[in-house]
Length: 75
Image 1 (tube, helix red, strand yellow):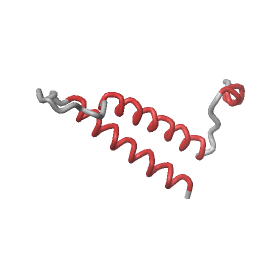
Image 2 (image 1 turned 180 degrees about the vertical axis):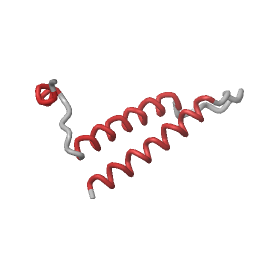
Image 3 (image 1 turned 30 degrees about the vertical axis):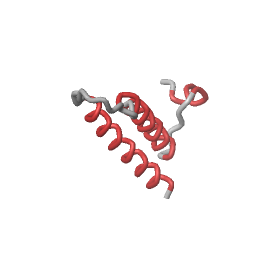
């Protein structure tokens, strides 16, 4: 159950990353209305959330990540 939720959240943030990247790449319209959302910032934050979700998925699969896990995987 936890893996399904994490995968759904990762896919939702991936979709938000793609949408925000598309939105930030469009030319800005010259108008008096201000843009309230910084789409490049949304792209970076959503991309960061995708990376954290992927690390969480890897941890759910049984691989340990982080500084304490480094000695376990030495060759």
